[in-house]
Image (cartoon, rainbow, N blue to C red):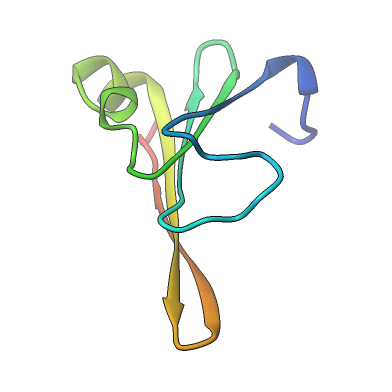
Length: 86
C-alpha cells in the first residue's frame, strides 16, 4: 500500500476517548485486511482484543498496537508491529 486511501480508513473512538483531547490510558489497535486493504483503527483505553484475536486475524491481517506511556513529564508512544508473511 503506497498511498493512504481515506475511503478505506475506518476510525472508531471507544471507552469515552475523545478525538480532540488526549487522555491516558490511550491505546491504538490498527489492523489491515490483506484482502481488501481496508485499515481499521480503534482508539480506546485498552487494546481492542476482539479485533486482533482469532484464526482469521492470524491469516489475513497485519496489526499495529500502540499506547502512550508517561515518564514524569515526557510522553512516549510505544508501538508493536505484527505481520503475516506471504
